[in-house]
Length: 150
Image (cartoon, rainbow, N blue to C red; front, side):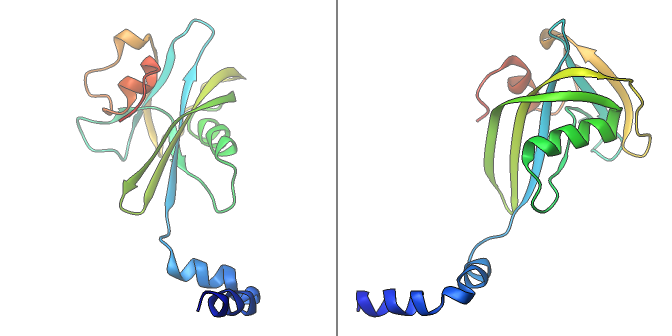
């Protein structure tokens, strides 16, 4: 029986990837950047489309199909703020949010001029890790402190 299954799988080689696509879950990937400046402060943004009382958070957005997640951080920070960053270590990888995967990377400010995208961002603020706004997204606190996110 096992040999038959192996032969069948090999015979399906031309359509294996399509078959796997149909049989497995699909995810959108939310990518976040923990952007720090030379003084150790972190960039927080007040997002226009996030729920009231939880609008403060880190720069973030969805990865485009086939996009490297580090590139997503660079793109999203640039689009939302006009700032340039160098992406560092992966600091969070979570799944289990139905069809959403959450990824976060450390990032370092390298340049650019702060220009907010008013369609998405209401306000930007550089904060020390111990001075985050009360209404910051809960996941931000451990990320900013460099802790493991549950």
